[in-house]
Length: 398
Image (cartoon, rainbow, N blue to C red; front, side, top):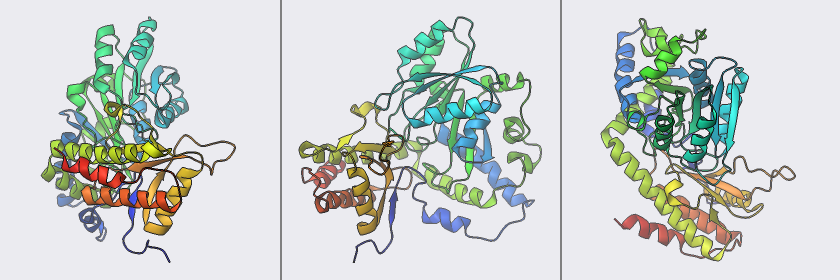
């Protein structure tokens, strides 16, 4: 007998919990893709998507995941043989770099490990060393989902301005958009890459690329851009099908429309504040448990922690044991430790992650923390009891 029967809770860092309103919006027959109402709905979504990214610029929608949005961002701005600078602090900077290499782009990696954010001084040094200004773009992950580190995008813009380097600043906001505060225009990102399955609370399938006029000018000077990845007709369509390079992903659009309605009603400042408070509650619980046990937050400095995902260490093998107990005995699915596998024993991970992005509230967070504390006790993993109480105290404080 287990206690897992009933509605389960998925606490992985994406895909996130899908609201009932989104599921209900998608549960309908296929529509007429030439219907005027569908066109009007999509046209109405564009300003709402821009509001989420805090931009007055352009957005292109792709039928893809975040990896597709990575490729779209590069296909429009960097030609084969040109160079990008990728400061990495987890798995996903390396992933974006691999996509670039696949397009014939040269990649310079600035490795930061897994526990520190992007260092603007190291980026400054790399730009100053690039006397020929060969670097076409900086590919910076705002929140790396594997390490849960959050980097300062605006600091990178300041470095570009101080050095006078013409490289584009591209920000990966797949994990952070709609969770952590992000202001594309105010922070100076030229291109922002995201997807719908995390803070936007919609099933995986839509990639988003926001771009400003500076990036558009670079795109117009490209020797060639493939028809499918070309962002110009998607951002400025003359016909409805051009939004998507073909048939519209109708049911994803219905779901995203419902999600955007929810976000618009709550407001971006309130959304960012909710995620910040819930994240602090999780950190309070983990820090309390860790006083008498091995549990540790991956990112030591709270200023560099994501408000959407938290990566933790628990000792070799213990992370997988705890995840299995929470899933099988209590119906809570925690995220795997990503990018930290032991090559000699891939089943022995001591890491796991908690996703707290999108459609989450206080009772969901307190519930999953309660399950984690029960699992620590059931598995005799050393910890200081009372982590849930510490989280509750954090939430009650103003």
